[in-house]
Image (cartoon, rainbow, N blue to C red; front, side, top):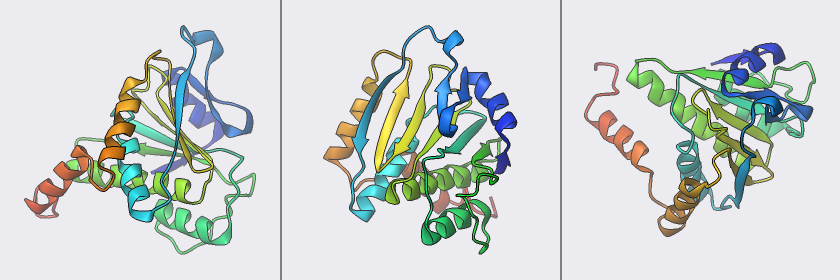
Length: 206
């Protein structure tokens, strides 16, 4: 993971016809949009376990790619405790990061490679970041290098927003219905990861 400047973030986002806009929001570039943005939102569960598993489900909605970006909206206001937890997840440090400072970078790049173990750890980290943002009702966005159809996860005030330039976001609707019928079940990608770990495929000795 590495933090990106405003200019660096836009260099990546422009690859999928997006850009950083007002209040550090992720927007589509108007001149490149053939279709309007379609979206649905959903109130995340308040039960801790259900919320954790919900974060797994929604994180998997974005297409896989060579990178993903997690961007903090300027509407986010961090208290001491959530700033500590979020910073600990990002940097693995006990230092308290002042995310409310306008000079603090608020865009984070996560890159993927052929290393299965490293990719699994990165995906889990993104799940936990989404979980913390939903838990503390902060504002942010997650975008993939393969979000060519405008796929973007928005997180605002405990709601998740599925955004896309595809007119029908039925895959998100199906995801939500499946979650409601089995909220305490890991998604398939996580079950495979757990199986691989138990079989030693993600262990240090693999």
